[in-house]
Length: 209
Image (cartoon, rainbow, N blue to C red; front, top):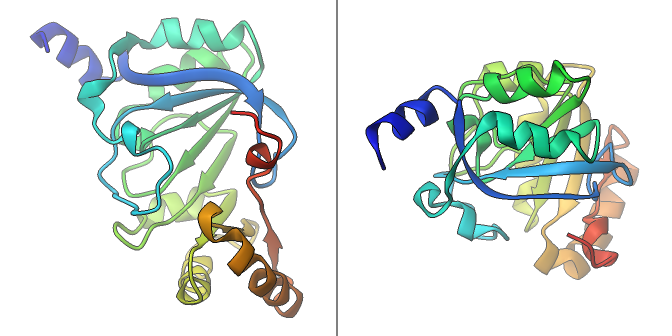
């Protein structure tokens, strides 16, 4: 990568863009909402069940000018979701500034493993055992989304719930390949522990991106 491009990436004026698309938010509190998704490349959290492993290597995704990314998003929606990969590996301030200056609502989906940057209207925190979230991201989170792959994940979910603020919404969501096995357990768990809500990847049921 040319030195000048790398410098722009380092300050967030360019980002390794994997893909961008307009769709329906399928998960969590905002499920069913039309939103423009920006998927940023680069992640070292390493979830074995990740369904976008192709996002992990940032070098595979071309550095794109942040203003261009924002302009593309604003053509479609005033709700913009930044995901990855792990978007907080990069400086998100230039992107959120460009979006919010034009009236967009900014959402992020993050593992919380990196320092929080950017100005966010909604922070969806999805902690992973392989690289735990920083407390500053836990404190700022609006939504905690815990992926349930096996029975041990209920305990991990409770541990992480203790780290977020009292107003943070709590969701458990089955890992897609384990959904038939885990959903009955999750239904029972939420009924016994009603502070939690169920989340499903409804976009996969609807066969949309």
